[in-house]
Length: 389
Image (cartoon, rainbow, N blue to C red; front, top):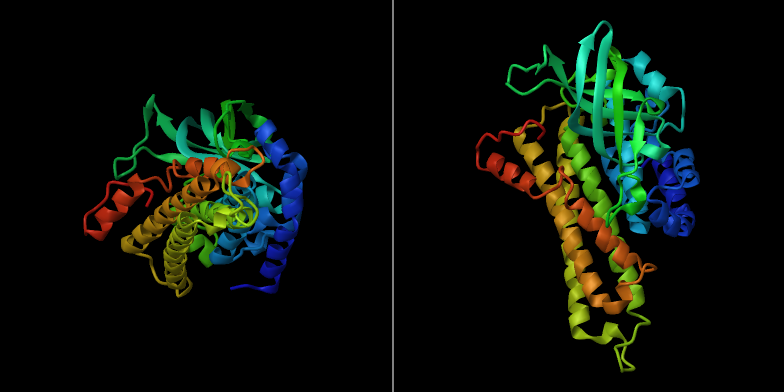
């Protein structure tokens, strides 16, 4: 539902477009979001969209939040990615007591968080909390965040502590950014401006109340944003960055085709039948993939709002729709890259940036092709051996 507050944020985000475009070259060179851009995004409220209203956040409905991520990603993939990562980090507040959530999210209206779900840390239980050591890759936005997070396996007597289902017990450890070392590892082809470096901690104390069972622990917030399947929420948020970039690539190409001539000809490339077909195919791919995802999100959102329990089938469709929307977006961008010819190869071309960026997103674990296999098992009535559906 588009409230006045949501509409105002979307308008403010669009108005930030020229500022984002002016920073793209710096983002690519520095391999991070410029601090002043991160601050501008924070000040208009982008990073508060999934923080509860009780903590001063916006607690936006999911579909408008996805529209917001698309809006930024349409301008630039790295900026859109950082917007999405910083915003979805607010969902962690649902697994924190009110006192701890206020310490992290309530005391600073412009707070930004970053972290990694992969359990690459080791946590040793001690009185009052844990001693944590670990190194986590892919921490997008870590350089402009005040709090960092890293999932860790709980170790006792030198062995991982097991849950009743046989999986190792893990906790999302939350610590001030000042407790971590940021390792300069982000030298990549796409999403260069996202600053997704490794972070590391060595024997850092994390109190029990900041060690959360993300996704499976007690939820202290009852709103639909926090009872929606959490890994499905993360997946469609990631996919929305891809759909936003696909929209940007198509629109950029259509404008390019109005002025770019065929080699050695006075004809514009928009007069070529193959180009017309490529544009039509790209538009159909994006709209179809996006429609499947948004339709599925709306159906499950309605289920959650009604207070009903979501099923494995619901969760499988959410994850499948996110995977499909991401793949379709990549295919659409590929078509625009091909259609643009040499017009897409320059650093100044948004199309080549979208091309590089979207193929980074297709590799992300929450939307990568193996997830479709998991969804297929559920649709076939089989039990998937996958704990984060």
